[in-house]
Image 1 (cartoon, rainbow, N blue to C red):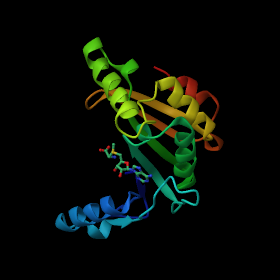
Image 2 (image 1 turned 135 degrees about the horizontal axis):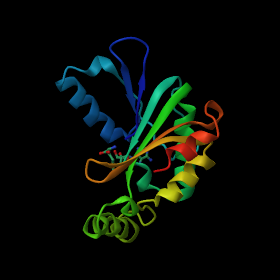
Image 3 (image 1 turned 90 degrees about the vertical axis):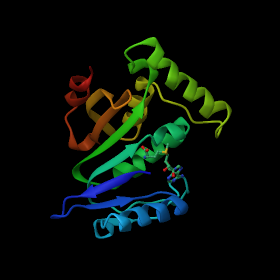
Image 4 (image 1 turned 180 degrees about the horizontal axis):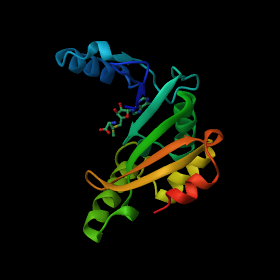
Length: 176
Ligand SMILES: C[S@@+](CC[C@H](N)C(=O)[O-])C[C@H]1O[C@@H](n2cnc3c(N)ncnc32)[C@H](O)[C@@H]1O
């Protein structure tokens, strides 16, 4: 479920674009928490050929989302997310990679999760290697501004901006 925030004065607005069933769950959770007024919910199947997102957002957040799709869809979804950004806005991609784990036991979990995705779940999703993720980000017209490893249970956060909004040096400086 990607989310987006717009800094048009407090309280910040948030927008999520999940599948319809998930959207109803999100609406109920927001209502129960008294936060319904802070969210615009958009029922969008993001793989639909005519999928579009509202624009003008300062940040788009994609958490454990891109790993659900094959690489060609990842590039398309990144382009779609970039289209929602305002000038200078940031796209955050949070995902997990076995190559960024501190030890073999920690790497074993995402390796087996990828096997599960590819063999038992939808047959074409997997945890992307960081280099593959960076290639998809570049192919989508974005540039990585910062990479942060070891978040939560071994996640990596890629902070990106549209390439047109950044200098070519930014990505090289972000590499750990
Ligand atoms: C692995 S879950 C991640 C959920 C949450 N972002 C997190 O980090 O815990 C993947 C999410 O992608 C959403 N999703 C999968 N396919 C989608 C599609 N075609 N369009 C929109 N959302 C989709 C699912 O509804 C689900 O919420």
